Image (cartoon, rainbow, N blue to C red; front, side, top):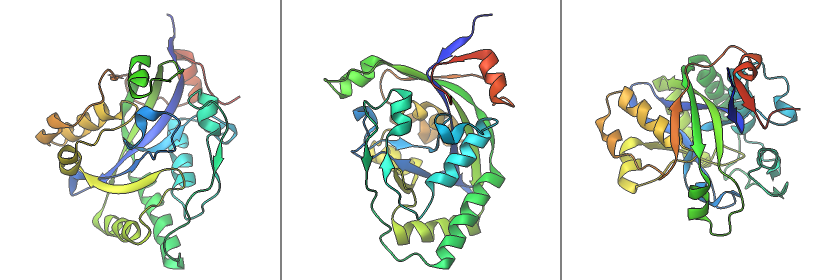
Length: 256
């Protein structure tokens, strides 16, 4: 049987308030992202199976845990586009300073952030694998000078419901620091707000986000803004190891 070709593999979390799945913790891509299409669009927390740091990932859950731990941090190292360059999404490996935390980081803040990451990992269960396609036509529509080809990514999604004590701690951290990520901009938002503000979601995550909300009986998700021309196809549940994925998929971009 012929293998399905994908550009790369990623793993992300749908992090939400357990008692009210209308409310989610997510990121927004800023204006510095090399792909103009995704700028100011929502994106789930997580990342790609690519680069030196991913070589020890045994499966997509390892990738999600590693990316979550790296990304949610008060440390603000120089931000780079090395991974995006490896994936072919950035022309060069650019480096840029990341804004420092807007408030003084106390030991209780460090502890709460560690507890938040631990709670996300402990509560995470698989939602499914999806083949998300961003065609060149969509990239061209957002950027007349675009030279990138379209791409298809195999993405593992994990749902992580947060109990009230953890959610309240998250809200406190988000209010104090405005952003908990060293890569993008975190925010707490809701289906209601996303629909009212007509905010779009990047990399075809919008199709899966819509499916998540509808799974929880939130009919307003039928009005979720969708980026035109993108697609997301269900591909079963996450596999046990990356070797299993490599037996099924031809992965163009992966750890060396």
